[in-house]
Amino acid sequence: MHLKVMHLKVMHLKMTHFRWLLVAGLAFVASLRLSYATSGETSVVYSLVVYNPAKSLAGDRILNGGGGSIGLNLGDNLTLKAELQGYATTTFTFHLPASANAAGGKFQSQGSMFTYLFGPQFNFPMAKKRIFGEALFGGANTGAYGDLFRAANVTGLAAHNNGFAMAIGGGIDLEISKHVGLRPPNWTTS
Image (tube, rainbow, N blue to C red; front, top):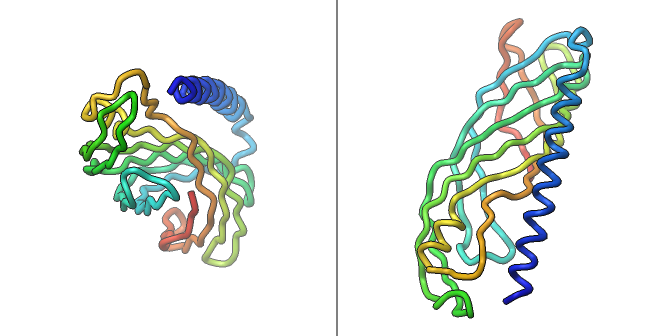
């Protein structure tokens, strides 16, 4: 069990380095000269996440959520994008094996999720539409594992509720008017 505690500490250390890298990246983006941007864009987003891990104590999940994004266009073909999404609270049922840190059994936990992603969006404008691809990286936060550890009375281990998240995908934007567009459902893999 000592190795698991060590592994969690290493993951927390890596996440701390990731946060500093994220702050440095945001500072760099903020320092860019805004005069290069031809415009910006904002959006309101509905999101459906199908959570299907290869190995899970909780099984598959479908999460409904939404949020928004803001982008700074650097010319016609590149947008620097920030996307924030929240997902509704759901009840997870975990089947934990007995270990030195917990008695084992069936436990329920509540958990919502919040993601914060940043990165480039590559645009290919055409008449009345724009095809795009994006690669966004950041983090996800959930309270599900902390709640599980409390419900299962786990001792000797800490549940870190932050983890790496990414979204890579693309789609099409359809022009409705000069300042309003519609983005049909697009495909993104996380």
